[in-house]
Image 1 (cartoon, rainbow over the protein chains, first blue to last red):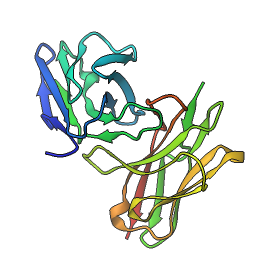
Image 2 (spheres, helix red, strand yellow; image 1 turned 90 degrees about the vertical axis):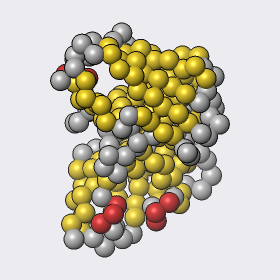
Image 3 (tube, rainbow over the protein chains, first blue to last red; image 1 turned 120 degrees about the horizontal axis):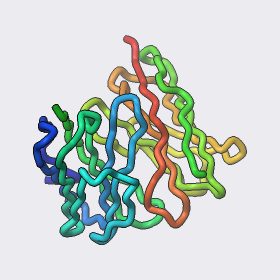
Length: 113
Length: 113
């Protein structure tokens, strides 16, 4: 595997379910990011980790819980979601230094029913 | 506040025609500037980036962008568009010392045969 991978690619869950999204980067990067991309809305930064430490939490509801066990893996744990949480969830990574570009995974298309 | 503006939500061009996508930024000092492309169902991919020096930057897939300090702009251009260029294009900026970008809302490019 190369680059940034995300699993699953598609997920349908009920409002009472608990599920997790997984992201893995094979680039040796130090920073990892979760973004939410909804139709007709700008890309929303959710969480940022640098060297496994959370450095950004953009007022994300507690029903989204990130986890970064090491610099290569990032999870997004989901519970008691709402239909408006349906979106494409993108993971990205970068070196974590000034001016670095980001490398994105293909995303997980989440549908909450 | 720092911001990135892409004034055009949609752009429609004919295949073979030239293309210019606009991007303006509002930062205290010149930021690092990026253009990303997102094909349907995929993550974002870096097209090009500007740090300093030559104001005309060459990227992948035949794209180029010109930095104009006086206009706080970083417009993306391509001399001849191909049908495969149909995608969403995002401009992004990062201030010096930051590794977290601010993205514009994106411009959707539609290519007519």
